[in-house]
Image (cartoon, rainbow, N blue to C red; front, side, top):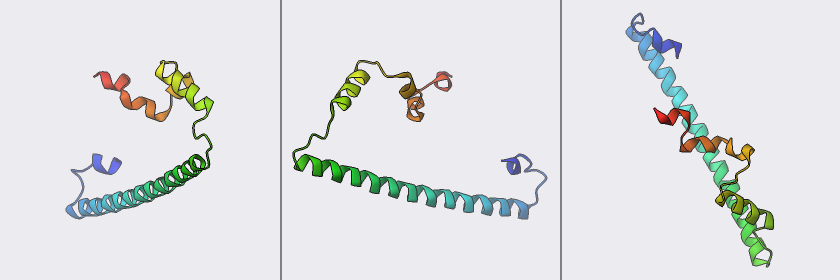
Length: 98
């Protein structure tokens, strides 16, 4: 980010080199993100397959703890530790007021 602050003093060649470096970094980040998404898809598919196998064998795929947890969430009684999870901020927080 410091490279962007001092744009005026940079030559055209410096700017082109900076653009090329940042584009390469962006491609690497995108590649890594696609790999992570693929890994997540594989893990989710495995979990679904296991749940379907349990269901087919007559096992319950939802435990009493799952039902209790869902009941607590629906009643608005989410434990404090869960409320601070990374996804909890998506709905808005202090930054969302402005």
